Amino acid sequence: MANTSRPVGRTALLASAVALLGLVGACGSESSTSSAPQPTQAPRTTAPGTGTGSGTAPAATAAPSDTAGSASASARTDGRCHTSELRAAVGRVDPGAGQRNFPIVLTNTSDRTCTLYGYPGAAFVGASGEQLGPDPERAPASPETVTLTPGKSAWAGLSFSSPQISGARTATPAALLVTPPDEHDPIEVEWTAGEVPVGGDESSVSLTALEAGTGP
Image: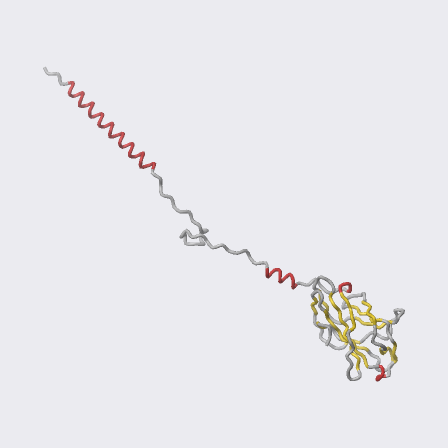
């Protein structure tokens, strides 16, 4: 009897080798495929809901300007002007129709903006400080708030009939005391314009409300 075991064994061994090579090849192919880099999506450069996702970066927006705030701050005021922040002066006489008219000027000497409203106080005084004549009468007016930036002025008109025409009793003041509206402390201004009416007929002195400027 012929021996057939050897060819069968060799055939089986060959088949096993072929199968093993195929398995190795398959493993190599799978490993190669899984190690390839995967495509990645480009990151969004616009915030969700604010762009189209095109990848274009949003334009930068400038910080809010502070100019308006500065202008607003420069326009703000810190209340009324106080006596200590003002300088008073009596302007040049403006005669007319038997009247003597003087501008009383208040100037802001402080470094802040303040306001004046209404009538200043005014009183003629002698060398010893005594008041000469009654307080001036207020001329009818509709006062308006005057805003004074540093260095700006407001004025009120002081008027009386010329004593030479009116025949009123007169006196020559040493000074005029000027009190800013709503203040208690006056500013003393030297009076150099001669006699003023202090009694008798036609002796009244009138005063107008403050307005912007230094006089007519």
